[in-house]
Image 1: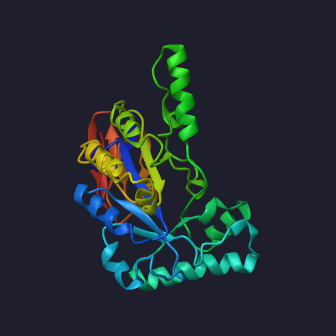
Image 2: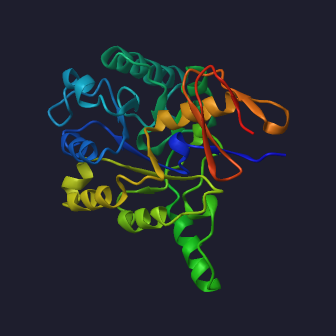
Length: 289
């Protein structure tokens, strides 16, 4: 049997994505940094929150044009304490409002205050959401993996035990770390993951106003310098990752993996026998071997 591995665009085996909440005025500076280093992020916005510390909605379409905008509910409530009707309204109306403002589909969600349950997840699915960022991150797992590796005098563990694994369920999407969790050191660990038989993801979350509060904008600048412009990293929004996975899962492989048909509009990439990157354009049938 010929061996085919899933790959990210261009044959890459690593992906970086960021997720930032609330749309406060500090997003101006964060966006300037991200655009300077060509790093993509998802910005989770509340369409019914309007005051002087939040960016005006008149600016959203232009300001966030290089990034994704996702639902953060209309008013930023603690969702698990809300009634079913209120939960539905908070999700659906924020989605409607953001789509009207941005003039593009909005299919992602980050829960405010980290509050959610399985009923809310199921409701979000029924409303057309393709992913949801849930509370917390994998930072504790990363610390445990490094401790184990040090005690065992062995290599750092692979996959999700390092915090750089690929989620099994995008509706329960847990980030790698908050930006205050040794961000630059983790970026260096991520860069040093070179085994191409694995896929790796680094997912950073936070709030841009925290950089003002903690007076540590230099942290984000250093992170961007360290991790940007890497040939083996795909820089993507949350939704781009989910949509790419959907496209890969739609591929139709022939017996023995000799050919593959791509019914999607977008190109999908695979690695053949570990070392040959093959692009499968949308609508095309490609000979693999």
